[in-house]
Image (cartoon, rainbow, N blue to C red; front, top):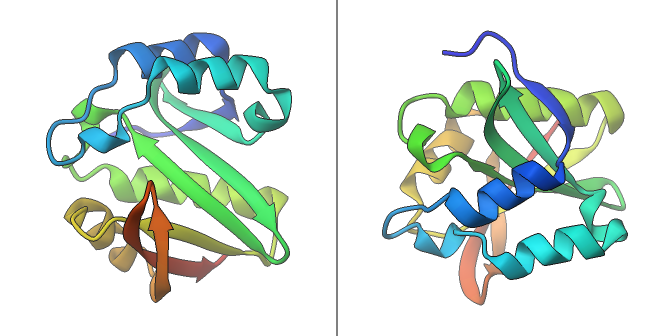
Length: 149
């Protein structure tokens, strides 16, 4: 496992790598990024300031998107497809939480997960997130989780 993660603004090289190379297998293929997302990141400076990359030993291992709304931080995160299901999620999410806490103390993290995504549901439960309702994610019903950091 990685000793330390580094978090910084998502750069164009990483955004292009995610859009072009990261492919999640079924049933997770809906998480695949596309060229439109990459273009949106490049062209929309307001949107891109909410995206961060997570690296370890100089290698891109994931990214996340955060947006502050009132006293909540909406979080959406993705780990590199080859690393999913290998028990690295806790350390990855912990690094993201610490980053959010550093800049948004006392906030509550909120995230939505599709019901079939057992890996994410298990991770969030193990990390102390509580189910707090339902939402819509990519036009599908999703389960909403939250945790105060």
